[in-house]
Length: 491
Ligand SMILES: Cc1cc2nc3c(=O)[nH]c(=O)nc-3n(C[C@H](O)[C@H](O)[C@H](O)COP(=O)(O)OP(=O)(O)OC[C@H]3O[C@@H](n4cnc5c(N)ncnc54)[C@H](O)[C@@H]3O)c2cc1C
Image 1 (cartoon, rainbow, N blue to C red):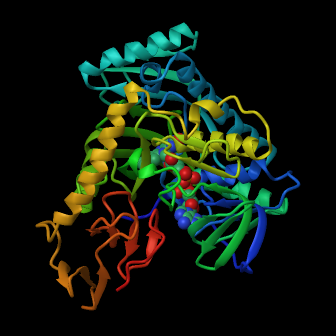
Image 2: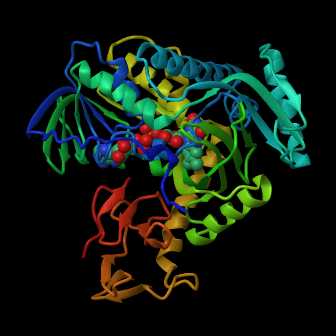
Image 3: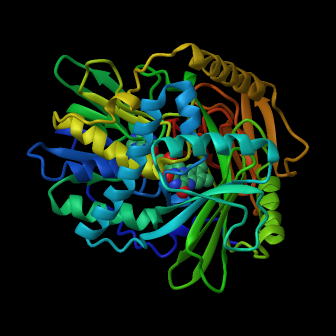
């Protein structure tokens, strides 16, 4: 079985050899070239301002390349929940924004002639839990009120156990990496400078500009857009206090032919299904969702996912991968100004596992702010929105959860599930992680995440040190491979 995401397979990545000459100056700097960053750049391609994109790795190969690539507004019944947490208007605007994102993707695909397997398919959200049917009925009441067409169903188009579900038909699926890299070609043709392997380390505010310190030198920018999935700084924003991270496991298997639908369960445990047709036909299945500080034995989780695919779908996964997303405490992403009345520092994060549509709409909102245009969704996604009484509880839950995660990792030492070749020990008062490879060579790292000082756990399947608090990952030699940490953990 291959431990890689289906979306990276066969993608020809011509290594971006462009070297950034620092100190470098630009009008707009976009940090992070995933769905949100590249979509933002795409909407700025005709602007007269100098726009630059940097990415610490390969454009499009971040979390976006680990998603299941569904473009749907049905999601996991968000609308009646948003009506309760916020109000009817917010729920309606969120729905409209998701529908608009699907239309933007379609328009970009047509205008840019993108070969990205975009296809209109039906979406289902379903449950096997009788207690959850009430939540579906509340969602139906919201749809009835706004006259949105939907169907109540008691089965999927394939033999798969469901008790109750809702179906809508005007949704889509696509190949997220082909889409992002298609847009990338267009923005580069339009004069936007793109640099890979440039990692933002810190951000410094000055009177009329920002200085972004990177591993390749300083970048001076009038406006900065942070689309790094999770911000690499704490202040402004204090995002770790307003979010938590959830991890999921995904598998893809060969099948004879594809079906024209995608489906997901409401809430936990996640069961998500979609199909994909390239040279081969695939079924893609996601499950085993948990907060990053739960279920630390990655190998066990992969095995559980494989068993589910075998039992529920009678297929064996050919590809398996794991990924995580940022969950906000009030159910809406943070898209817009990091600080009130400051149009010069923008962010998009907290997509609650719906960052294909939310990343696309983020591109539109952020570019509108940068171009001085009004955007009808700006208000509901405002990162500075206040906590009302209904949201305070979940805010404190996230603060509690973050503190608990940090403490829990401190107490965490050698667990019974670690294989013999992984050891956690102390040297000179420092917590050390040691992995011994197949050739008997020891790889020692500092077992401490530079982001918020959580201890790390070893991911036996991917051979990485993972942070259970906010999802940073490091290779066996301590090089950071995924943020929010921007620093290595080499000794
Ligand atoms: C299992 C799973 C399935 C999902 N399926 C779906 C789905 O079907 N539909 C849907 O709508 N959403 C889905 N999502 C959510 C979606 O995948 C994410 O929300 C989305 O991909 C996030 O996009 P992004 O642009 O914010 O992040 P990314 O794609 O991770 O892009 C961020 C980029 O920033 C770069 N970067 C990071 N730090 C730095 C730094 N310091 N300096 C420079 N560059 C940096 C990274 O290299 C990366 O390329 C799913 C999520 C999960 C967990």
